[in-house]
Structure formats: structure tokens, C-alpha cells
Length: 513
Image (cartoon, rainbow, N blue to C red; front, side):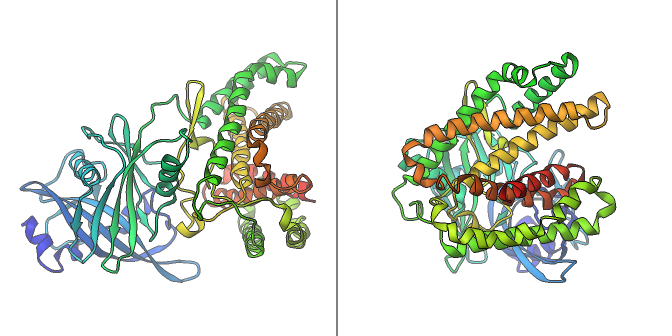
């Protein structure tokens, strides 16, 4: 009966079309949770393995047709969904709800299934190919050899799916598909084969889907699983929690000196992080290939940067006005509205200074504290995928290295306030000027140490960076870009944290003024 499901024309298509749309909307990796799903269509599929007489594993490519409920515009996206199809209920498997299926089949997610992972690992290791039912091809690419003996989900807090497939390997499944090479595969492979930069997980292999028209999509990659002490975000939260608890009780007279003494070890890691990111930028800029070669920024890129910031600012103002009753800090909002003229003047000031902005190179693209692992006294960088909400074309663009730096500086700011919010809740107090002074002093010191490491290591390649006259302005420009992006996220997802990016926007606008 299972064989008939995939051999008889139209039967699997009908089953896929009946998947409950809420399954996608509740998934972390599905990006358009506010859109209405009108249709789920099977694009291509292939049988990977028949587990037993009652279940089968399929690789399926789906097209999801949607409609934006605000603008009523229709669009569609491709998704990769490994499926376990069974005629019986399976204990422990992650089920996919089906609405009105005419036949008694049960669908389960296959991404963390051990047999699926073993088959895919074999695909990559042996560089196999599988002809799919609608004309496409599944193909494995091997970079290094290793065997698979276990599989379990690593986390669901990701726009992709992370599976531990053996004790020293991770499989990252790219759910939303776009044609072209994924930046994480491109950057990892280039760093691995063309530089001596080693502070990142080794790429082991990857899986691609090629359509009948020869369009190629990356479906997943396998990379080294690094045993670590945790990421820098978690470590930073521990440090801030201990710092606030200690100074709340002791009430040190010399706050700056107390912070310096208590956080000395942490500040050493901030210097190391600056050095590490500088070496990453130098390594990427030194790759002997046109797509990595440093170049001056182009006028249209600067215009686009400004246009996107202005668009995000106007969108944020509109949403602040719509959600006025939900936003607590009226003073921050009033200040933000008062900077309209400064936003409008940015383009006039940016274009004449274009030659002083420095060089554009390939960067990490989504750098923050959670993307850095701590291993003893060493650090490594994760996830060269870039911002997953952006297109692959956007993520493969060259930018100023200061875009990465701005991301890290904004992450330090978030970490400080996240620790402050948590401590306030634990000790059950309202806003405290004393605690705010502590986290502001901490952030100033950590940023200073970070810059110390970065600028010393970038050294003779300083031409990658803006001129001395424009340096601070370009840093603030990218911090403003990041804070506007953050504010739009927070106002729609976590409004209690909105004051963090709002204050960041105001700080950058004040500096640019």
C-alpha cells in the first residue's frame, strides 16, 4: 500500500495538500507566520528508504502558496521536508497533522530520524545521486569522511533544523529553499580550502537538489560538532548576573574600578573576540577569488543602505503610532519622532563621503554573541549563513567589515539590558539609575576592549576600514541599521524589550547628528 502511495499518480500529492497549515505556522523555521496559507503543493520527491512494511522515508520539495493578510499580495516559497510516512501510529516520532486525508496514512518529520540521517550521510560520503519522481536530482557532496551512529534534535530555536548525527557532527537542514549556493557552505569551504583560518566548525559535506532545468538548491550540510563551554551570550549573562548581584549588595564607591576588577577575565575574552573577528575579515578578504576580493563601495549600494534605513524608520514610526497603548516609554518614542530631519539628511552626507567609507568585503553577515562558542580560553565562530530572513543574493553581497562589528556591539548592548531586566525581576524592583549606570559602564568597557583587539589585529590592512574622519560615523551608521532592524522585530514579537533597540537608535542618531 505504501508503494502504491508513491507510484500511483496524484495520491501523494493529495496527501501533502491536506497537511494542516498550522504545522508550518508553528514551526520555528517557517518565516511567514502572519500570512494565510492557501495551498501546499508537492513539487518533487524521492524514496530514500523503506524502513519496514509499514513505513517509508521520503525527501520532498514543497511549494507553499501564501497571501499577505495586510496587502493581500500572493506569493510562494519552496521548502524541504523530509518525511516518514507510516500506515500505523509511531511512538516518539514528531507527527505532522493531516486535515481531511481520504486514506489512513500518518506523516512524521524525518529530519531527526536515525535511518534518514544514515541514508543522507551515505549520500554525502559516497557522493551518490537519486533521480526524483518529477525530474529533479538529489546529490551528495563529500568533504570529509566519518560514520553516523546516532541522531537527535539539537535545538528548535533556529530558522533551520539542527540535528546531532554523531558525537562530533551536526547536520543543518535548510528548510526554506533558494536557488544558489548557501553562504554558509560557500564561506566554510573557502576558508577551509584557501586560508589558514581554523576557528570555525569543519565542513564535512552537503546535500543539493537540482531541478530538471538544472537550477540548484542546497538542502543541508554536515559539519563538525564542537564540544564547548557554551556560547558567549550565555557566558555574558552569567557575568552580568554576578556583577549586578555583587554590586547591588556591596554598593562600591568606585564603580568603574569595581567593574574592571570583577570582569577582568571577561574583558580578556572581549579582546580575543576582537582579534578573532579581525582575523576572519582578513582571511575572507585574502581569498584569491573575485567574489571575495575587497573593492570600494558603489554609489547605488550607499543609496540602498540609506533607503532601507529610512524605510525601516518610517515603518517603525507607523507601528509605534498603531501600538501606542502597548509601548511603555513615551519619552523614547517622542525623541525618536524628533529625529525625522536627521534621517532625511543622512543621504546627503553619505554620498560625498563614499570614498572614505573603506572597502567592501565578504563578511559573516549575522554576527552576535550567540554565534561565538567558548572553548576553555579559545573562541570559535559559527553560522556563516547570514541573516536567514534575507535572500541568498543579499547574504552573498560584500559589505563594510563594520557591519559585523556593529552587530557585535549591538549584541553587547542587548546582553547588558537582558541581564538588567532579569536582575530587576529577581529582586523585584523598578528601574534603578544605579544599576543602569553599572551596565552602561560595563558596556563602554567591553566595547573598548573589543575595539582594542580588533584594531590591533587588523593592523596593516586598515584600508579595509573607513578613514579616520569618517570612522565613527560609519560605525554608528551600521549600528543604526541594526537597531532599526531589531526594533521592527521587537515591536512585533517581544514588545517588552522594545526599549533596548529604541535607545540604540537614539544613541546612534545623536552621534550622527
